[in-house]
Length: 249
Image (cartoon, rainbow, N blue to C red; front, side):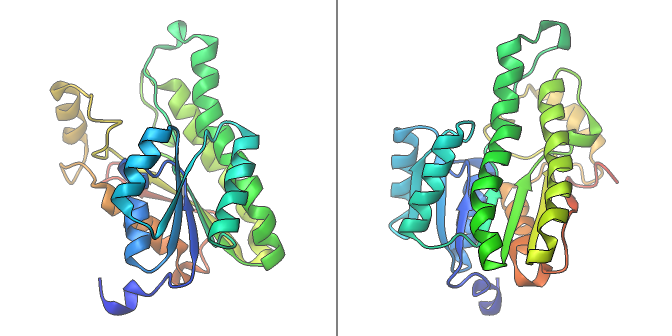
């Protein structure tokens, strides 16, 4: 990155949910490299502590279950007290389950929806209030290409990510006149802990369907997120940007 790029987020406060690993961690690292003050959350005390040690004192780690609206409100208050008003929100926290529809239990379905969809809503609701008052802000929600491509055995995950895309489009319209943009980044097959458990046969099948014939690195997703969060993307709102090696082309 050039020195000019490094300065894009000087003085800005960024909150990344699910920042302890994978795409979320790559987003935290990217925003730190570009001069932002970054807050992030994880679900366990130990995970947040270890990640805080790795990121250093220039970040703020918070334990938060994004499926709990009261915990989300408390997190946002903690971040704004510690770092200042939130300029950029990256909703990355998410979970995946694999099961066929006839076998999905009610609690399994509800857990995926609570984290992947309700968590995005709770965070957007809490952060957008201040953004509306200040008439500025960037919201980037991490979905998945499975939100519009579909995948057997992951109907609950696909449904939650499709809902995030629809929610983001509506919110973009609501906030546009306040100079707040809302966009979605939809990664394809990405090298994260969530995908590390796939069998070699499944990975081979996935790669064969990707025109670039390779997986996406989390840093590539973070680069797309950073662009949509920047002043350069001020005129872009309500879009879904695939980062998938051409899979949906």
